Length: 608
Image (cartoon, rainbow, N blue to C red; front, side, top):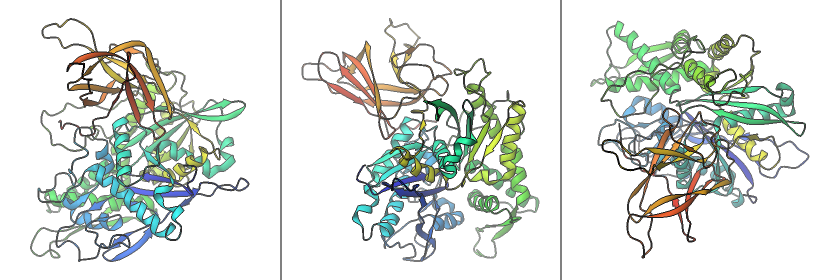
């Protein structure tokens, strides 16, 4: 929006949300300044405080869980829920009323993400919200806190009227991105653009170094962005190139969606504390264990962010009639955190050691589909094995092995963890000169970088070229005779190639396809994180193991009065990656001006 007064960058994180902003039209002779907005929130009953981090937690209290009126906000005096700092603290004591990891649920295709399913596994009488609704609440809170402080006397500064750049994991697929946009629209935000979090972290590094960044990198090298958040592990490779005699940057690889992060670490620490208590004869039930996991998260964050702390107390509420008397107290030490996390999640491995695939049990509880192998280093080996130079099986052998690493995420505050990753990378490629690019701030970088990206789009900064991080395909049924016992093969038609820039489209007019109208039909959206050379219109017949289904799109495409239900019409295909960063696929009639848009199915079927 050319008329906006500010550019706003939002890190809608699994653990924290952050808002950064800058002037949309800064003076030409002055370097733009990016600021972090302090977010007003409830920190204790009836106590408000503005803080740079808004913990991404929603607490839905029961009738006796908080004093009446204690959750009031200036813009919502009758608030019957809390989010932010108090939600995190009180929710650790009453975990069945706490919504956490909403962002991870937003990417879980096995559940209906628009249905009220959170808090997951809570009693039937508990109030619930959908992952989309919870995500919208965080954005609404940012909106209202901003408007109270920045727009009280300036209508042009209202949040809804600004340019907003909202970050998502690079590994988010088209449906997860679409749902993120839906959450933003529910919060009244219409002018948003999506940006990948690893790119945002790199933009923050560029902005921090100003013009000095050009001396810190060289043409031909690639930089690994290792982003370990609360819910996901995100890997990206950014290559330094030269264009017209100037340094340029291109994002050349994005990893799989790896549901492995701080949540897994919190559970691991909780199991360690549970075992320590069991040795002393104290046993915890499932309700207490959930509270313990949240307490371990708080203790871990404090220990990682405050190097002088040697231990953090852990308090677990009892279940007996004498609540105070049955309270369980213990502690989590720095040495426990370092050893458990280092050895459990960052073991020293060989570059040929990939994640271990475990056999799945036939029946399992529905929940977040966490990675079965918690070793981040093995997932990193798999990512680099696919992408880096020297891998004969990789689709892009021209990408050099990374010579620099930029870390992001609160877990990376630990010097030991960063040093372990660097040492493992050096072990895998002893000849490489590997260095760490220092992050400006591991908590605030993504929001800061998102605001810088808004400036870069106006020509006031360096842009990373990249486009979409994975190719997309539409499933096309083969035209072959029916064979008893053999399902009709489905081919994968590339409609969006790797790297297609936002705001651009493609047409497939070289061949025609048959479109079913007038009756229910299912369309399959597919993608790949390895096939980066497929072009628009290319058909892949044998795609097992390289291309995976993202979701299905179920629709009854309208037929004309002259057409019968189930009639097949000849069509061409067109695709577009919108400026926002979402995907559109259109079927265009060959013999008329009719067009059908294939809408993503946002209410997925439940499946194990």
